Length: 134
Image (cartoon, rainbow, N blue to C red; front, side):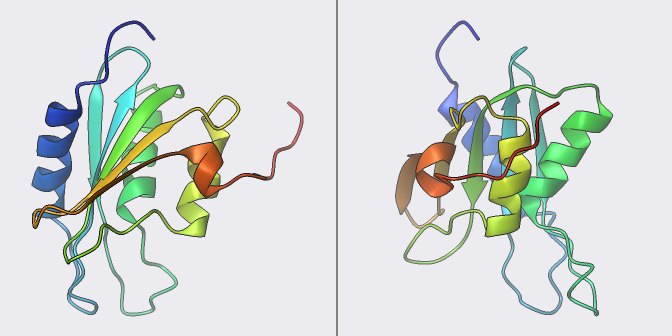
């Protein structure tokens, strides 16, 4: 986990993913870029479905892509939404991120192209994450 987090690179990747979001129902595109402990950036976008329950959020898409690529340790995530305020990961995404976070130490940047920005740790957004012993 050496080195500073390259937030500009994460922003670019999240915005790029946001542009690929499939959101014909909500029209609320979200992009996420995840920084692995080895320094790789993997991105995801939200993909909606007519049944809504089958919709997958951008943050989980990024996590699933990272796991499929062999990564299970993450340092940071940037989440791009639109609007006057930056949106935060939903509860399900927070819990999925907690599965791959040590004591909630994951750094989270939520931002919009319009200039809104907020920074959190996962522990701040999900202070009592559910966990099973492995």
